[in-house]
Length: 296
Ligand SMILES: [Zn+2]
Image (cartoon, rainbow, N blue to C red; front, top):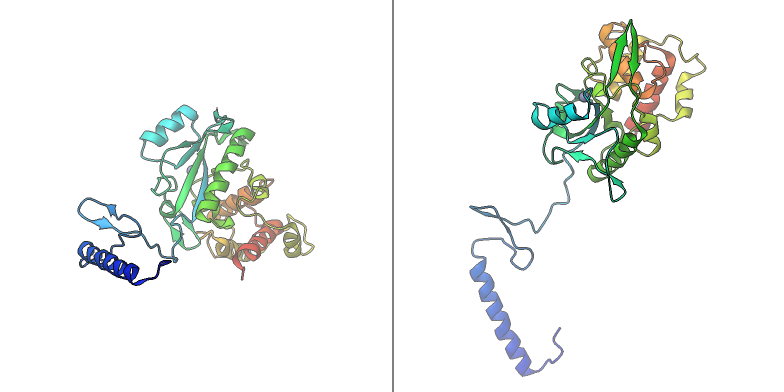
């Protein structure tokens, strides 16, 4: 703003503007660089001007995938750091503390792919490595003895650390609740992790991942006994609609169908992961579809 608006001041201002204009022309010849905004980034043989960022953009990360390592901490660290598989993060059984906060190992930057998912599918997407962040959690998984499967529990310390990490990742990448999944959800015929003791409900109560509302489950249960037989085709169709792309659509409770139903149960009804097509499983699946896939 010109406060001293007299002839002399006007003359000086005109000269000044003319010089600025000449300098501007000289420095931006045949270019749309904005020297008055941000210095362009030197990329070696050219400069990138990122002074203006488009409003139409979002994160390439669409999924957050949970795993258990099977291996102990030392073995898992070696495998994930130097083997032909990896994960973005590794959460140990008792994460060390630094300034009263847990320390979580990061092995891959979030803008890079880590190789944690393998052949995988969810809701029309394949190769979930391309669009996900993977968290490996140190846990032995399960052992089978005389037909009895024993699962190993997670420590509350590591679940607390996973919760802090997951919440932060979900917020920064704006990941939808139904896209926070286990390896067994996106590769159900190959994988069981993070297993039936992974506390999905506890995490959902902290705002991490999907969980059905009891009232909606009861609505779809419609007075049936929870373990009453459900229509197999209806359950297959509902699970496919929710995201389990590879479940057969045959109406037959074959081996693959059972395995995928069991994967779903490990996530949302861990008390019974028999793979039976029962009314409660169908009601949970329908409640999830209603809550997360029919949003206006
Ligand atoms: Zn896994």
